[in-house]
Image (cartoon, rainbow, N blue to C red; front, side, top):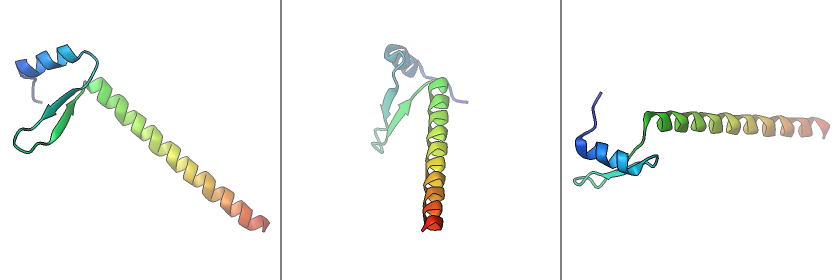
Length: 71
């Protein structure tokens, strides 16, 4: 596992609970540095949203099938 440079550690401390935005000067690609706890929470939130979307799709499909049966 890589470790924080002193500069990144200072940026993390200065940001507090906020993410640290970083830019690769060669590619101009942006990165966001967050704590592992925040990252894991984001993953769980995303998983919950996917489950909710899947449940909603299944509910709509079932409702549509019931309507077709009643017709």
